[in-house]
Image 1: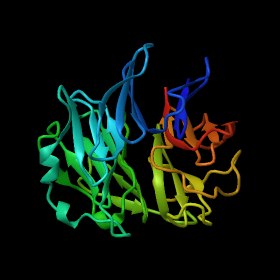
Image 2: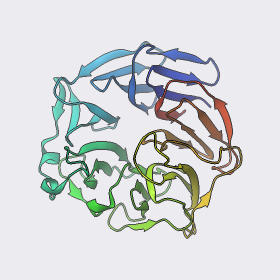
Image 3: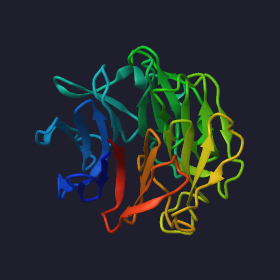
Length: 302
């Protein structure tokens, strides 16, 4: 197992052959497709590494900041500031026009009055593509991006969308009201918050039959959010249970979108102060495996 942490200064590979790649560059987002790796660098550039080769810049945007990406059979999708979706084609990054025409787009907003952002993207084993807009809910395409339709109420204030390839229909979305869960590919949702000290959630991952989420008292960085981690059985989702073993009582900042990841029963998360924690049993017990890293911005387990 290897953990790749995209940070404010380089891509840190933790495990066998520990090393730093793209040193001196801020990593905004990270994704894997087979043997290839993709990254958003400095919120403007898309980079690719094929197998054991070298990282190469393949595209850049001078118009919008880039927030997230998803390599898929339909091509690499990139989410941007101002709630746009781009596709990487032969001519570079091209606007996905049907996404601009989704129903309800003119109601998307942010609490502070700025433009909304495309914050995260996920694709399930059936080929459904889910795009999380903040604040605009979760938008779904069932036809490789040719058309898009809203799913959840945008007032849920979703911060990430997560799927599990081995669990048909499951979609998980941490939001400002709790953890939103759909079991029918986003056709219907329920929001769960029983057992948490604060409903505000920015990150989630699914480890087999358990969802692991970060929860806090609010969005403001550097304040007293009292952030903590929780786990929820997806077989009987009634009450979220606090993760305690091996973790500090509280974290000062939220666990950010993209900074919580799972693979099988292994779960890992990184923090804004450069800590990295790993659990091998779906979030019951934790161990701090790194500290003093630059601020973690995205995490992938391989």
